Image (cartoon, rainbow, N blue to C red):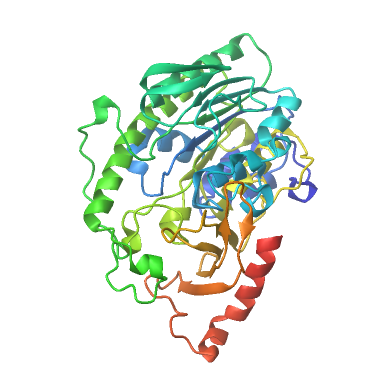
Length: 467
């Protein structure tokens, strides 16, 4: 990770640059802070990592307290993504800083394929951090199996009310709303900082806003703002789309219902985040806690007729992404427009803690000025059934997106089979067509493909898929 290090800047020494960050909202904030020069060295930061479930962008209405703290007083990443729009692969990328084709968790059944020795929790625990997990871990993980490298944990068997948990090795039912349980268990973990001098890492992951999207009782009838869709909802003419999208049946009414249900579940997450902030402030640890908030994938509200994740369209892989670290100079409120992703979380945490990982990572520390020009986003079909999205990979830049679909499938271990033949392709001009309505490769001639730069994009995508 040496190429990602901030030159001549201490691990957390950005204090002198906070004012510069606040004044520069249209450029990468961290680079501005780094340019301001080092400040006095201090203790390693605590780490609070909050990962929600199936939360797309455009859900900030439900998170006013979260936004007020982490975005308006921290950093809002405007171009945040996940590299695989599916829960277990995405979370494994959060833990490892690696693409799914490198960490091996290519679908929700393959959670045990992750090498636990490459995870951020492993590195932090070995470096003397107190580690805790509260909420969902990895899909298909057996509840009775303790999550490795977490000193304390309340591991949730996904659900919203009266769910099953593994609490520090004891499997039990805990009555009540699970987001509240996650909040309270996290607060107990934070409270131990009053007597335990070690820095800590808390991985906090409520089930919201995953289906069945059951709200807390007090929010069950909450009215949400009206929503009249967007041009991609549901997109009537899909002749230029792959077969599974042509056959999709999601409507504007479906999208409205999913959106409303998601927003109601996220209101409880917002309450929990405010409780974390209040407790950190009371403990005197708010300043030197690095807080990162991200959704594990997005979700389609009827876009192109689709009402799930798993697709290469923007609502499925774009996610809310916030960061706050006042002692690191990242507490003044700024906007960072770089292309960033879940693979950048582990490198960022380890960079802040001054830890060099033993295993390679695909992501880059957000505490540097590094800026990528595009991102690889990938997905594998699980099983050989006819439903769902085929395997695909995509070159995602700010101004364009190129996608290939393949004859590939995976089994429950994440093992890939198939010819790898390209079955369908899409190209979108994201400047003129941000809702991905016109696939410019549909019935395109070789000359038109050449003019679009498709051969070069295909070559780069092929390289990214094996890097």
